[in-house]
Image (tube, rainbow, N blue to C red; front, side, top):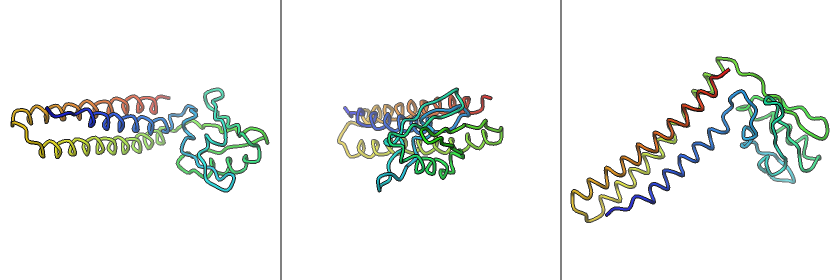
Length: 180
C-alpha cells in the first residue's frame, strides 16, 4: 500500500505556513503579529523586531513596542515607519514606541483582501505541487492498478481537505478584515 503520511505532513505544514502569513494581515485591530515581518538594524546586523523588543496591544488600536535596549529605539521606529506594506507611523517617548493603528477605509479593506487572496493561491499551488510529487512517486511503484487508483484517490482527498482548510481560514480572515 502507498503511504501518504509524509505528503499529509507536508500539506499540513503548508496550511500552517499560510495561517501564519494570514496573522500578519492587517484587520483594523492591533495585533502583535502585525510587526512580525519587521527587521531592525541593531548591533551591526539585521534582526527580527521580536529579538530586540517586546510588542503588546494597548486598547485594541495601539501597539506598544518596548525595546530591551533603549538605544535601539531610533532603529526600531525607523524600521516600522519604512515598512510601506504596514503604512504605520510610530512615535516614541524615549522608553516605549507607540504605534497607532488607523481605522481602515472600505477601499483599503478590499485591497487587503485582494492581497491576501494572492497568498491563498500561493498556498494552494504548494498543496498541488505536493500532490504532483505524490503522484510521480506513485507512478514509479510496482503496484496493482486498483491499488494505484485507491492511492491516487487518497491523495486527491488529502489535497481537497487541505485546500478546504485554506479556503476556510481565508474566509474567516476576510470576514475579520471587512468587519467595521
